Amino acid sequence: MITFNRPPYVETAMDYIQECVKSQKICGDGAYTKKCNQWIEDRTGTAKCLLTTSCTHATEMAALLCDIQPGDEVIMPSFTFVSTADAFVLRGGVPVFVDIRPDTMNIDEKRIEAAITERTKAIVPVHYAGVSCEMDTIMDIAARHHLMVIEDAAQGILSLYKGKALGTFGDFGCFSFHETKNYSMGEGGALLIRDERYVEEAEVIREKGTNRSKYFRGQIDKYTWVNYGSSYLPSDMNAAYLYAQLEIADEINEARLALWNRYYGNLLPLAQAGKIELPVVPEGCVHNAHMFYIKAKDIEERTAFIEYLKENGIMSVFHYIPLHTAPAGLKFGRFHGEDVYTTKESERLARLPMYYGLTEDQVDQICSVIGKFYGCPVTG
Image 1 (tube, rainbow, N blue to C red):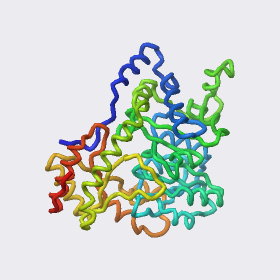
Image 2: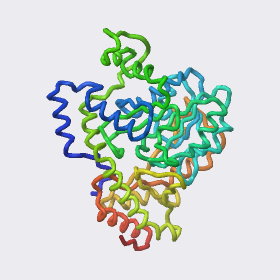
Image 3: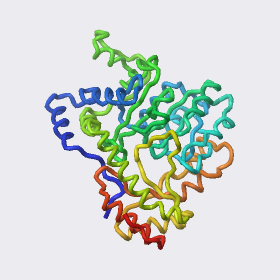
Image 4: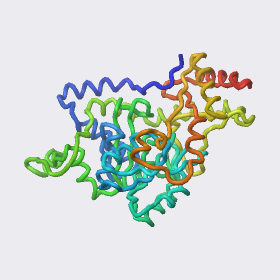
């Protein structure tokens, strides 16, 4: 069976984890947490990075820093993971879902402004598959309406929009290091902070509401409870596992891009024959090969497609059920405008195996099986 995903692993990770254990510093904000924070800051240009226990928690921190209050509205796509909405619902916020673009599966920037009301507090663009939303337009809307922007860049590390790293456009950016992501610490994430005036408050929130970070820097002689917060610090052992991958991040990225390009080249004849649709990467966007997907004709064809691949030893999966159709989405949020593409396009999408360690031969094998399903020979 060719699995859908395999978490990335680098041999030096075990050495780094052992270092943590021997140093007797395995809790949060140890040496490897700091190394990961510094690597992300250097690579993205963000003012501050704080490693977190998950992208969900990074987004929850962003909601706190944006001072989301009960009744505040937050505009986002419905085609996203539940955490995008949950982080704001926990604060009493109201997710306002708008339609997506059928080409990138990202929020349709042209639908955002019409959804703004006097209660709107923030916009949350989600960079699906590591392909950027139209950030120039989104940032312009936010500036004119005095709104905060929180980038859900869970899938977007090392992706760029017009030469700038995803996660660094908005007031806050959120990365994921879940085991399904390009770089992983099992469970983990990071909060990127654009404006340094939020850093101290973010450190307090992340340290259970205490000024413990100042204490460890020697800025105060004892620490105490100063604000609300929670425990958002990952173990330094998790950070050590991640840092081994960050050291060879470009190698991992190039390997994934090579597989993505091989999929695209192999399957292009099927797309040209009108059998499937392939991912679209708009001009100005540099993606990170987070995933490769195809779009079938409809949900019935997709179901048969996934089953056919499974019968041939290949694991393929669909993705999000639109949040506005879910029980919690109906309870906590609302959809603004017409759902022209969100449901229809989500029901056509099937993701193919993509991970560091997948081979070109395996990609060719997968593409060959896809060709057989559609009755059109595909060769690598």
